[in-house]
Amino acid sequence: IKRVTTHTIQELKNKGEKISALTAYDYSMARAVDAAGVEVILVGDSASNVMAGHETTLPITLDQMIYHASSVVRAVKRALVVVDLPFGSYQGNSVEALRSAIRIMKESGAHAIKLEGGHEIRESIVRILSAGVPVMGHLGLTPQSIYKFGTYAVRAREEAEAAKLMTDAKMLEDIGCFGVVLEKIPAALTKQVSQTLHIPTIGIGAGPDADGQILVIHDMLGINNEFKPRFLRQYADLHSIMKQAITHYVDDVKSKDFPNEKEAY
Ligand code: KIV
Ligand code: NA
Image (tube, helix red, strand yellow):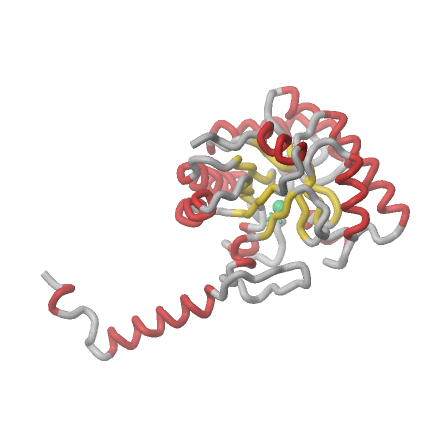
């Protein structure tokens, strides 16, 4: 199989084909996502929420991200694997940012990294790119800044914040990022940014005009059924299916139906 690279997803934008992306955090899930033909697999710091049960993405560590990323990389034959730099591993110190990015690339075998923010982290991004590591940007509702925002409401509804987002997006393209995630911003702004930039935009809660779409796999499969924002399309109700199967198992053990003769040696 031909591997997806940063160039592949640029070509998809160039020819007007939408890019599909999903998160994954472990080997078995990544195998399914890759086999289904998803082009970009993000090992998101949303692992902090859906894998570890934290309320925010802030607590997850670089070591934990590397553990998730290496599990995903072992499963993937085709997709481009992008890994989030976690909170505290890149802000305000570009040397530390590069060290964190290099640890992810070396210890997990992933293909690219993603970090949140615009001009504030410009120096970190430039340094990581200089080392030959592809970088994806992330603008809009950046969850590592949730305590600054104070709310998970849509970002950049006001002209000033929208203008800043556009400036940041252009800057990310100018310094050499290969793509930008746009999270929870008005659809009209996503359209403007996607038409202005040459590099692909990947949207979540950002409307139909991003060059690609991403969702958190536990949300779209209904494994996590505690989070149902308007932008989420839930493709399955796996929480119910899992609970039903497990209840059945408990009943079979209690009733001594399991194991039967054929299931014993
Ligand atoms: O961590 C994550 O899952 C993300 C995506 C939602 C873009 O950053
Ligand atoms: Na993230």
